[in-house]
Length: 312
Image (cartoon, rainbow, N blue to C red; front, side, top):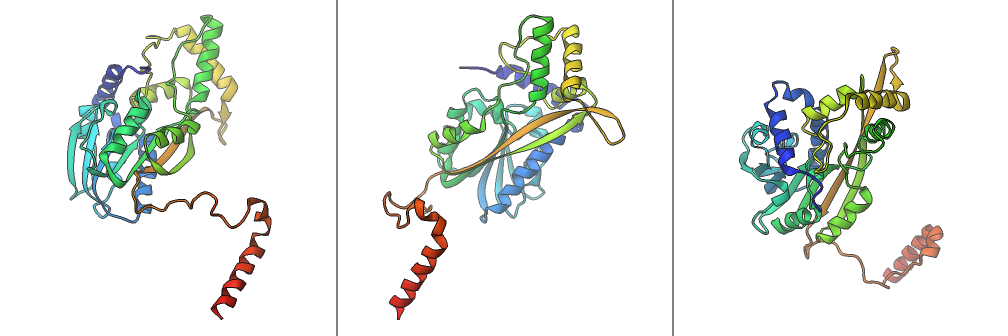
């Protein structure tokens, strides 16, 4: 099932990249890219070959250091974004135009694949995860950040209520995002193991709904759903802005009104299986029943006492 118009998304990215004030809209992606890249430092190894899938303007790559990575491959479907991407000085960098949806790389060739706020526009996410797993070496790592299901829920509900009132029906204005409960299943089916999945929320205040929508366009995060409505009626737009302010509007300490916009970020990490990785004990090999967990301290003391007696 193809939900997103990838050609429309490419045109949106190219238009955003050509804007003279393109850096003005990097604030969310820069913050998430920094948080994601920081997690690389938690893994105590040096990666020989790393792929930054959907690199955009280098929101992750500019934070990756030569101390952690020897060779960095940048890919994006948008050539303008790709060549605007910043990287650390002295690092070996390769840039390749590649659509994340048709991602194809040599099998067992990469040590790390990292992607930040790009994969939520992919139609076939299970296939994409499978291709990433295939490209990784054994014990390789996949690390990503994607927008979660609660992203822009304020804008979504305001537009829906306005359209129901003014037009008698609703249209798709906000992209459907992955739910955190589905991510683990998708990664497991793609043959990833030792999964780590967590969420974070970034809430940003805007003067009104119109500034929010303008910034989303500047980020190239505007609507790219295939059956989207090509234009929003002016009357409906003003009604949505009023509903947004009424339902979610807040006041700053200096009594300036603003509307909050929530961005839910799902961080995910999975490892490609390898014989060297720790494995769970065989079923039935446990020596302590779950019903006895309340007296675990006593059990540990008794076990240590038995061990001391045996040593004697």
